[in-house]
Amino acid sequence: MKKTDPALNVAEMEAYLLEVFPQIHADGEQQYFVDSLDFDKTLVRLKYHDRHLRPGGTFSGPSIMSLGDLTVWIMVLARLGRVPGAVTTSLNVNFLNRPGQVDLIAEGRLLKLGRRLAIGEVSIFSVGVAQPVAHITATYSIPPM
Amino acid sequence: MKKTDPALNVAEMEAYLLEVFPQIHADGEQQYFVDSLDFDKTLVRLKYHDRHLRPGGTFSGPSIMSLGDLTVWIMVLARLGRVPGAVTTSLNVNFLNRPGQVDLIAEGRLLKLGRRLAIGEVSIFSVGVAQPVAHITATYSIPPM
Amino acid sequence: MKKTDPALNVAEMEAYLLEVFPQIHADGEQQYFVDSLDFDKTLVRLKYHDRHLRPGGTFSGPSIMSLGDLTVWIMVLARLGRVPGAVTTSLNVNFLNRPGQVDLIAEGRLLKLGRRLAIGEVSIFSVGVAQPVAHITATYSIPPM
Amino acid sequence: MKKTDPALNVAEMEAYLLEVFPQIHADGEQQYFVDSLDFDKTLVRLKYHDRHLRPGGTFSGPSIMSLGDLTVWIMVLARLGRVPGAVTTSLNVNFLNRPGQVDLIAEGRLLKLGRRLAIGEVSIFSVGVAQPVAHITATYSIPPM
Image (cartoon, rainbow over all chains, first blue to last red):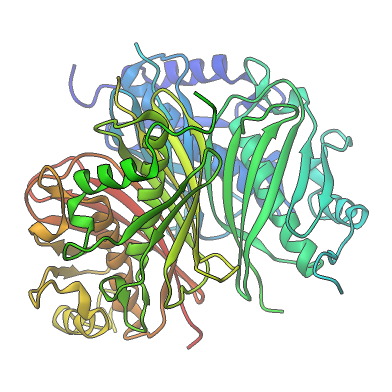
């Protein structure tokens, strides 16, 4: 396998995501889209939708944190395959700029994939805006395999 | 005013919360309850409800982070009154133990209330369980008044 | 063993600390003192000393972070005994108030002691001052035993 | 001024660093070197030296955290000039891989430079090794100017 081949491709990842987290699809409608699973850059998009909003029409803090957390989960599974039981042990977020009324794009990178812990960082952008909305690091515990 | 008198009492806080974040009430039903606004300990309860769940029937990570974030917001407003525009600038969470199928209780304490930044820590418990589910610190930026 | 009996007592802990981290003793002089190893509260004191200072005569940020990190290490070993290879995997610090020109006291509490990870929180105070100087959480990875 | 021109050049920055933090030079010998102040990438090098070490001959956690913290300070001052009183308000570090017995290189990027807060992220490497040693985010409070 080449260094850049993920264990799951984009279609498999979106299907597995829906299987594991059915509740993240709002009213049966897909909200999260995996745009890329490249080794050095994973892209996950969260569709602009009323459901995530806080007053003022922007995404809420929790919906931004969820997107960052999910992006790290996707990066871990893209490397390890369908690992049941990988759970977040810690997450740190800095909120940087107010998001716009457009989709959010999470751009993630794995910092470490160890035997017990995986750590990723994610920059989150409003589509078409250069300044990031937020920066997140998250650690997952990987169950013994 | 005594040191222990909050700027808003419990009823005022719950009303203001609903006014500012109407979307946190699921289907018109109250989910977050302020159980105490004491100076040294603020208690906020999140009702056990299908909406927050991940497979297995426990609260999801994002719903736990939201509860911690909201608890710090409540502590800041309990001291400063109805400040529009106090926003989270950073949040750190450690997930400690799997929550049970019962209400969550957030037990918060303000670490600092400065002119520009307020910082709080929150321990989150499943009702009736001594081991904490999560520990959160969050920083709010306070707009010039 | 009672819940409150540490695996190492204060004298054993200070001796082991010196054995493992000889360089933390400045010019052969003891700087860190374990004041208590109680189950629910561990106290570690860092002596006021020119060596830690930044201009203005207060402790530097790094010396405050070191104290927090060391306090969690001490709490882990107080429970597990002399575990070689317990290493910090992550640390989060909020700096709250400028320290004074007096000893620092770290007041620590273990949030979780799992098989693979231990997580502690530490509030750091200037001796005799009620407002905390900093708040730290740190995670240690525990090697298989 | 072009977007890429720092307010201080490398020589000015190293001189100011020595002026503000004289104690970081061990025994009068320079340890920290600013290798680049480019707008999108700042490089700071910490010379391999016994003073930073923990048993085993690698850099200690605190010396890695100090390097990350200092790199963000340098990035802020490269943009704003000699601002007295910019202080760290929070820092988050993930330790990823054991450092080698060579110089450390911190590669920093400002995530936000606001009126009140500046936030930077720093990846730290052992010279010549692709896997990072640590990843740090730090927030500075900028005094009113």
